[in-house]
Length: 509
Image 1 (cartoon, rainbow, N blue to C red):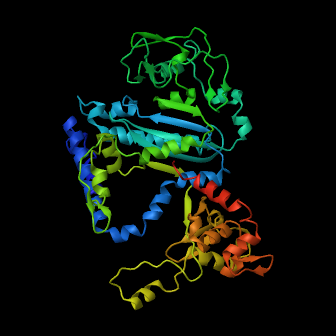
Image 2 (cartoon, rainbow, N blue to C red):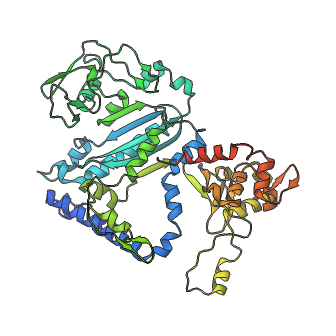
Image 3 (cartoon, rainbow, N blue to C red):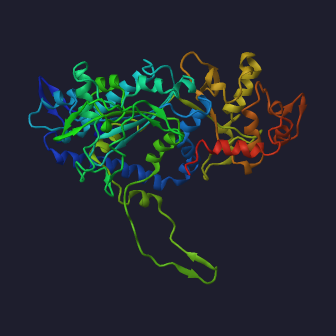
């Protein structure tokens, strides 16, 4: 159904004449149609969820850990450091590409075509990611993640975390911050193009006394803390937040019949701003909270206030309170807000979140305890025949170590950096191109031996059998826990330190 609507919402022309395209001239009615189309798609997906609970339960834990995958990957790949830059990129409905496309049908406005805004924004966003990564605009990039959010009024925007391969000391230097981030108006004579871009896209307000009705005003004050104070030089406050240079140099600009100065300028990079001609906020950051900020957008749920009254009847026989089971699908649908822009984005199957470099998920298990999934109606003999040797990434890691000496130089978690897992052939093959990071599934410290096995898999290299994982100084230990003890992984409070550090990478408390 999604593919059908994705096809039907495209315009097709022949000899310059429109020959296909649903509701192209219907204005806001087209927005309603796109929202209805997406809700139909969503309904079929939720219907599948409701009637396939057994299948979904097998993968529920995987989905939860995948949600926090970028946080875990960043911690592994960039040695626990936080993001260097936090970038917000917002769609501009007045982009030249949008205007040129709308000219083909006189009378159309950008708000009539959320599908065009979504497609152009996706093109611009992809180009921005290429600039930041492959073209190394700010320098060599270690990792980048972004999520896309949709404003109530319809415009999509992306929140991007960028991790650079630069010494943290250098990145903390105020002079280095000034090279890439500006919070001032450019000189109107020397850089007229940059000046116009900042005035059009990067001036906050007016708000405060100049406009008390501004949306940013809360209890008589600007919720974004504008206007900021003048500052002669950039500095980093004691709590780690930057205070950008905002000199009192007399530069001013007119916006909505109000005169604004450097105190109202949103931090930006002038070169990116001129190229993309849109609101493009660039902030220096050194806080892990910026990563959590991204993913709370994905889990915060819809904006709503829902209240209900119901009777809870005590069960005298059992001594418990009888309550109706929670219907998660119904909870998801209640007061769900869907804009035409979000509907377009999801119908076209554009990414809501982006992660680079990619990650290989690595399951693990105790010896001869591979996970086997089967339906309750399947005969045991049929299941055993289908499963066969039950090869897994872990068992084949050991087989590869037996065949190749260079493979023994990598831990299980490091293996995807040099080897590729062939799902069909159930075998590891040498990596010829690309890069991938391994991630071993999380284990609860109360799970016992699986937890200690996971600790060892992050350390042991070249294991050719399960006994090798338990071997320390040529002594084969009877349990994985005793092997961890021999390595000093459980001495004192070390075990709890490891558990807390791992939880800190994905917990959102």
